[in-house]
Image 1 (tube, one colour):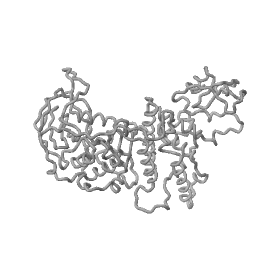
Image 2 (spheres, rainbow, N blue to C red):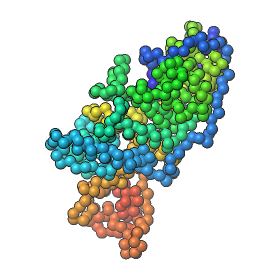
Image 3 (cartoon, rainbow, N blue to C red):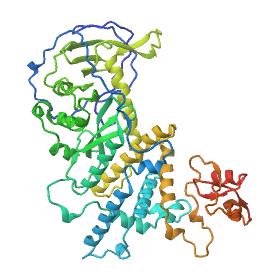
Image 4 (cartoon, one colour):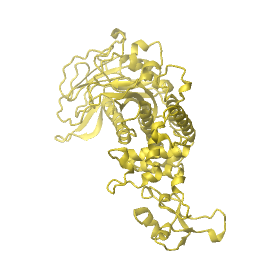
Length: 554
């Protein structure tokens, strides 16, 4: 994940809790990896440390009540909704109409004085074609090749038969070149995100409107590699990929659903201002902006050390929101827990609202919480040498569990990454938002269908449904009237298929059958009452149905 903290883990078999000079014994059995502490030098909290009265007492936390009737899907979908129907909660035909309109207008203004050879044959795009364009971009990210030309290569070793059937290479490149989201004549302000503002606002609204989160929320950074010219490019000197487009994302911890996001430059200018802005600093203001719809409802926020501070957690507490996470010892307002601890030892101090706990793992880890005491809980693990149960502070266990789920989300998002190296920043970020939308579709589909489907399989099913609903009529047409290979279901070998009886819409008996596509391919005349409804083809129940869905060359 993009957060900078170390993973908090240590194996301790002691349950005694001590204060500032506490000791729980040594433990040498720690094997988990760590999250590296953030190296950012920004000062994010300006509060006077004397405002926090720390002592060596354990905290008795107050966890605010949360209405369990609030969370869940709010969109009009159910277990019968298809993957494409859920995806269109975010990328509906209306938003595609907007993109189509701006893309066509951009071609008119861009090429009025400069006729590019590739664009001479341009014709205005449509919603159907734009859906196919996005499906093809998704398929490109799924099938990795060295260059864009290789996807349309006729070489027997590189050939991908379906690409030219979906769209010609020249047309795909033209659409990628002309893809646009804004009318330049409408620019009336200094918004750095104006070229993609309309898409950002629509998606943020659809994300939050479709699902309300459970009690635990997490804020994380999302970094998109970019080396070109960009207003919001963020320098990270210690990383190999030094230049990134940075955004901040709020997740639902239980499902991984992305509730909202803001871009780095947007966070610098358009964050919520309040009377405590100087105290909580830049990162704290980002948190308060993202958390604004969820304050005073009993949520619990999990953060890493880039955001955490006593001032921020106190402000959240005033708004009936608990919080916990790793924190830097240099934060203003933090107590000076100066004890030199051995591995497995713990020390802590508290105020009337906050607990600051130092845990000695392979290195010191400092956490801050408004909803934990310094008690130990079981980890369902045992020491391999002694067999004694391994215990850890509850705040450490909760942090590792929740951040582990966020790590999984980041891993899935990094696995798709529909971007091209040569794209301009706004196009690259648009495809990043498409990635976020696909991921949210995956989360909602798993909830509604109650199917434990893998993301890889889901991803192909989404592409398949788009191509089936928005086919390329120009390429699929056949003047001879016969069925062409390009009308074949491009992804018939993916997902599960079930036979169903064919019902003739006209109600006449003589037309109550369909030609079997497998028999027809072998020049045999056969009519059947059965079909695959998903693939929209007639199939003999045996053996043609199995052959069609399991054999590439049936």
